[in-house]
Length: 308
Image (cartoon, rainbow, N blue to C red; front, side, top):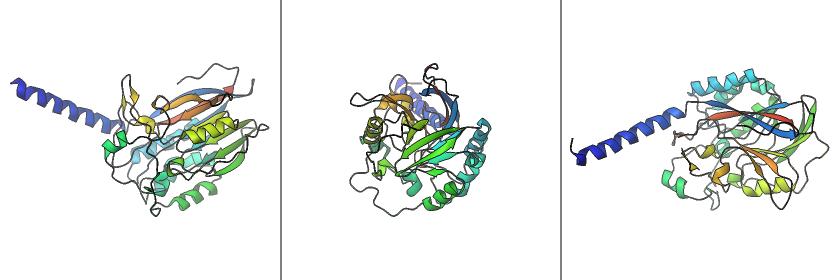
């Protein structure tokens, strides 16, 4: 075969193969396990299941079955950081997938795709569009997803609604204090200056999108642990380069996993960002970034340090 033909053919074949793999990876679910030394010394462990960005559609049986099986982990607490929906008829699919997890103590916030159905976007603009902020009114349209029905379904099962709210739960004999915000990506977040409850066994901040204004405020307010999603871990990751984007103003190095966040000399907060379980139906690809849920084991600060 002549080089003039062979080179383009090889490139096309590689492209098709890479695309096929990226589509297949969206169904290759992973359970991550992370240890976070954030409790008082000598405390018994707490097991927290972090779910995010399911972007559920009714026909996604493999995803629903896999998520339902997470109940076998018997977590002490479930933290859901939003973007549960990707279809107006997906509420039943979400509830079926979460299944027995809804019987566990839980907290939740919403993301943009709990309010608005996903729309087709130029992927090049996504990769070059900076933070992906909603400034300029790009989200000023009527909500198209049944988020109030989803909210009722969660709260009726005892999960705590943290959308611009505070609350507390008794979990495995410990009092946990929470602060949450509605989706910062939509600029729905309403932050306050109330410090973390130091009398609680642990204070936790919960947000969908890990924008720096939220992380900075909660670190300064004394929250030892912050959980978020939204980034999809970058969704497309390259060897040595990692995530290409975060779709917010968080740096790419912290697009997924456990890191710390610290401002103005305050004690560092642990930050866990979930790479999430799904994708938009208009960009159904992942590369080197498997869909995931994470089981965080919270330990006393004298325990061994975190591991991915």
